[in-house]
Image 1 (cartoon, one colour):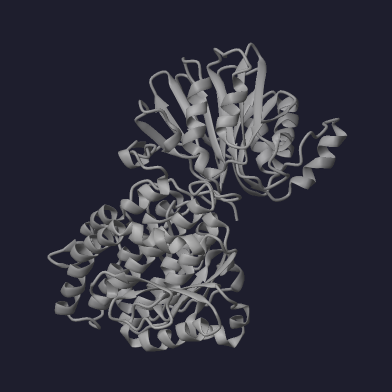
Image 2 (cartoon, one colour):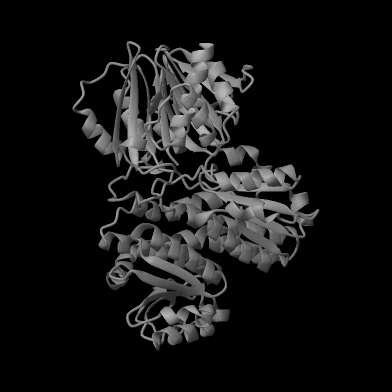
Length: 607
């Protein structure tokens, strides 16, 4: 949430900062702003809305030759998303941009008021800027001022800070929210994500929690909060870390759905050897996995739905209890860990704040942790005991598609691996399922995508409604939960998912004529029961859109998308791709911005 970019170098930085903001806009687009420092004077320009509006506003100003600046694209947490609350915020000689939340910002207000500071915004950020400026006035030392202020602040934050009388340096602070340093020839940068770095930057450093950085034209320095120097761990900037392009697609979301077959193929190929699951490269301790008596899963949003999918498969293959819980509730519900348990956390970005908090709780309790993430060197990847990478490539659209599909495919393979390790699945059966996942699944996803026009045809009447239900049984209920989330995220239709048999226990009262119900039925064992539920809602006037194999019961359905003929374990994943396309085309018909849905951001780095 929120994107930060800062530049200290030899080139005019105005366009570098703007390009960085465009690359970071997936993190928030409520407002944007830029601060440039030249001749001990700040030029600060802010705009409500997307970065393009900031760029347009900047045309009224003379192009700056400043080589030092910070910029920000905002996802609002404190105060309305207008210019008044847009970053950067300036207090005294200090300008600051911020990603995160300061929980005790109100405590700073009387301290600053006593020193005659006045507030121009409703943000926690302005109060943090005031504290840093106050202590800078008292000490004359930027590092001492920042350290002293941070010791008074509680919450999760990343700061980029400039001082009006320090024309060659920018300071960064990381506590809970990601912040990276980019290193070039005669220039240094700070950013929330490597996507913001210019193409010629080939090295970066992921700042550790509780660290302060000082960047300048000729390099950088790192310190802990006591101001002792820290050794940097430089990483090469790989292609996956670069920004993404639409490559001719109208939207990133559609492009990323079309990338699913290749992403699944690449990911599964990394974890199959001699036709069997092989996770040795991930560092997973097989001796612990063999002794598991239970497993906990923590994740958020789409990743949580992948976790529920994993719960279903692991319980099926291992016959041990699996507890899947949204990460934001995990630590508050006082999870009960036994001696032979482990925690599996799932996050596309590897920076999801609630999931990271769940991971840290498990580590405090001495519980073995495994992370499924897409981003190398992310916080979760660095802190988990073992990391299983999804090789999905960069995902830009706020609504996750290919990341979810890759997660479900990879977790299917991991569940199969657990079953093989513990002898609950024979080698022959494991090889058969491995073949289906790695060879058949990408081809069948491709078949679904090739029939995109059929999905689009389902969307015209759905797009005219303001509410919808998704229903399914067993693993299909989890696919429905993700399908409903996608539809509500980008089309703003109030879509709700229910286990199919649950409707008649209350919510069937909402069914009326032409009410859209999307039914998913991929498991033969529950096909007849789901068909009965379809007839129940159809008899009350619902328009039912059924996603199921061609040979499943279809009476009661208004329209049917027949899934390609495939092995049963693949069918739920194929159904998920159908629901992604359904959400995409419904949102387009409603005139929605599918890549940047209102009030949402891609990477949720606040709790």
